[in-house]
Length: 390
Image 1: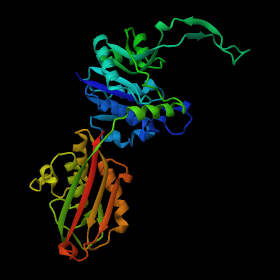
Image 2: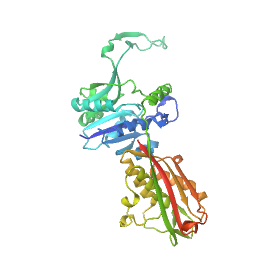
Image 3: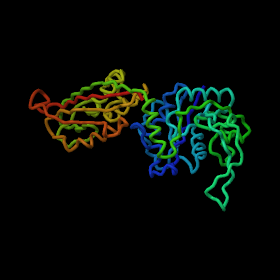
Image 4: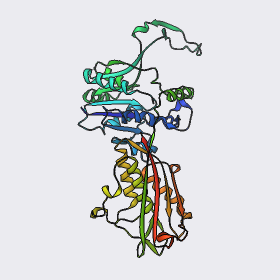
């Protein structure tokens, strides 16, 4: 059974009172959106994701979406939440049987809750996570013009029959299609499914599955994150590369063309920094080495960009559920000096592996006139990479 998750993340969070979209604010050092997306990327029942982002972000999505361990498409959202879901639903594969919809502002949906909601929708057609009311529930009359500050009780509702809806909400594909076709105002898709004539099953929600709505919710979220976030241990790998320097070749180091009378000789662009970092990432992920994946006997890799090979290596690691934590590389070259090019190299490498530039360190040294590198006959690089579970 194919299951697709839609993450509704196109809202601006006007009630939150911050100019930044609230889903991009951080909890325990990670954006709220990353928490929410990761819960579905890591769930064994989810095959792929569609994430609806604000227009100005959809063209340049964050790296945890572009380098997700599962297929993750990004679409621009709409004016309303349900418009964003409609946009995302258009991207759902025809092979998908169950669609799960989740608010990006709920970062702590557990794997158990996601699984139970999917199972209920598979059986009943539509399901919504919800918490039964614990307090006495009062329904109020509309406030009058004479006393606009006063709420007056209209009736007391039996709390046993009152449930507070959460997400995830899951639907068989045909049920969600009917619901979205109504095009009427609603605060969630379960309401639309009800209005389309479908029965919606309640799944017991979780008190920790809070929605970040106001700044007062952030300390609560930090406390939940501190108690629930798993410890993510890292795995380290090392890499090394060496190339002779010859006339008539460009000198490419860390994806940057360095003005030089000589360049590195190799089947590809002979970028020692990118090749060393590629080997380090592959080694940390236990995926072999650069020669195994991009052999110089294969004409496809003749003249290949080191940045391209590096990006492919990061993608291979992502396919194993791993992300790059940080990279540290040292390039050894007698001349020309590389100091003024270091920042450009760091940016190029960071972009290739999908991490912030603050996670990439590149240093340049000479070999003090010793051996082939010291005599100016070769260039080499050493690298260390840390990868970790997403």
